[in-house]
Every structure is written in structure tokens, then in C-alpha cells.
Image (cartoon, rainbow, N blue to C red; front, side):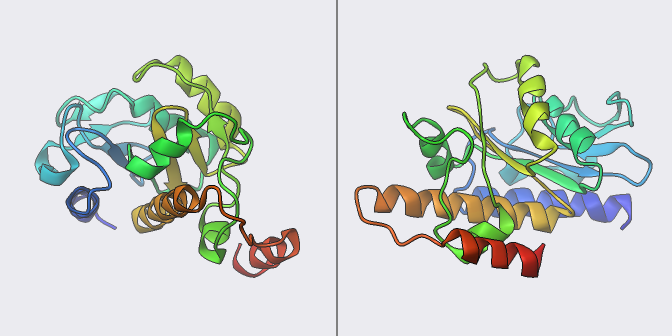
Length: 210
């Protein structure tokens, strides 16, 4: 896909996420991988609802800005995910309400924050580890994310939000939206007796769809 098409894809995805309330203000960021090893990213301080394709940040394979506005201060989250998952074509990070709420709960399983409530969650996310809290923009967070990203294409940042890598922007967007819907279901069902997918059912989904 051409760079101009990728720029338009980022703008469309950002507007879709913003208009449906999956991100707000200037929160959240999106990136896509370029064929030369660099990336396009949303700029720092920008709203995903009003992105300008011409002002997206263009980084080279070393992470240096070569065109556009200054990239998101969380660019290291994206480059870390790409480094740990070479086949990734895009990364999406949101502060989506229900996912953030789960990331703030005391007593959740840090190795797997959400149970397999639905087949599509098991297929698109699988296991979701919790990354310990670090201040936004703190590059120490990169080490914590990197320690998990090799085995997990989705992670949840404590008191912050999800980061999801996908083979394409549409795949990453689909996965992070599935994560948010599952977080919403999980919060709605807290206190109720749950009928979760069994280990055998999850294994069958992995066999069929991964």
C-alpha cells in the first residue's frame, strides 16, 4: 500500500475511534509500518478525531523524525512493540474507558487481566498481561512492555490503557475494539456467576484461527 493510502487509513481509523468514544481529547495514538522499515505515527498533542494526513509524523527505521510534526511522546511504546513483533504492520494505543477501568482494579490476574468471555476475545486477544504503572511518556515503560511483547500482541498498561499490535491497521483496530468490549462485559458481569470458555474451547479456537 502506498504511503498516501496509509496516511488516509490512519486518519480514517482515528476519526472512527474518536467519534465512537473509544478515545477522547488528545489521548491515544496510532502508527503503521512503512516498507522501508520506518513508521507513520500520530503527532504529539493531536486529537485522533481531527488528524491531518500531511502532518503525521514520519520516522525512519532508527526512530528519527524525518517529516511532519513531532511524534507522540509515547512513540517508544510503538517502536518497542515493532521491535518485539517484527511481523506487525500497525500499533494502536487507546485510553478507552472500560479497558482503563480494568487496568485500575485491585486483585486482577497480572498475567491475564480478562477471562475468555467470548470466542472473539479469545481469537483476537488471547492472554492480556498487565504492565506495571509508569508515568506517561516515561521511557522505562518501554522495557516493561518489551519484556511481554514478544509473547503477547496486546498488553494493558496499569492505570493507563491498552496497546495492541496487528498485522495491519484494521487488524489492530479490530483487536483493540474487541478488548474494550470484553472489558465492558467483564465490568458488567462482576459479581455474577460466569460461564467462561473452557481451556479446551480456547485451545480449539487457537487451533482453528491462529
